[in-house]
Length: 318
Image (cartoon, rainbow, N blue to C red; front, top):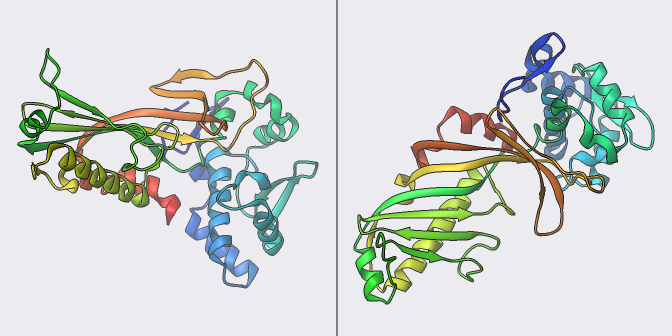
């Protein structure tokens, strides 16, 4: 099986590697076909629903249920959309949990049988492919972000303002958990060195940020908040690089499943080809499956927006 990757549609079966995209048309092609079949212009909600459903089928090779689109599309809307799209919606398994596919798309029959026959409470015992099917179609996100930049005069100004450097390396560490001037559920730690560097460690494991333009806009906003706090604490107008020129050193890239109820006493924590797949309980007590990997690089925050990885991951937000 290929390494888990946000843009990797390869999956394994008993015969080796297959690629879902070799079995299914691309989204724009099949969307045109569906629109012609329906005979009406799709609403934004309908188009979004079709895109998410397409991702589930193509990336996971299995049918979908009506409860896989929350909180983005609520259950009542999903049922209305399913009714409006009846000419292109296929019922795969009709039971207390109804499973659907879309006209013209391939689903793996053995995986479909497994997925529709196994109770939700027992799905954790599935194969790795089946577990990953719960996260592969979810939006790409990031947390535990490290951003480094150059500054001038900040270390001296903070020292004059009463911040005590560490005795061993003279670094000044500022932790801003639960700071009223910072975005909620964001836990930043700032490290200022005598060598005129500043590192922002943005902890947000319980509230990951979208790996998409909207997410980077949020990061830029957070960095602006942190710069303001440093100016207030240092009582100085220190020099610092523009946000777009700052170095995005690394971050944890993740996809989270929808809420998933694990059987009592069951947990999940495995590493497969550099990808960590585990059971995560968020602060709101929501239980999920998370697949994540650490991405290290040397791009500026602006350059990251033009990488192939970012462009592919952002397609879900088009």
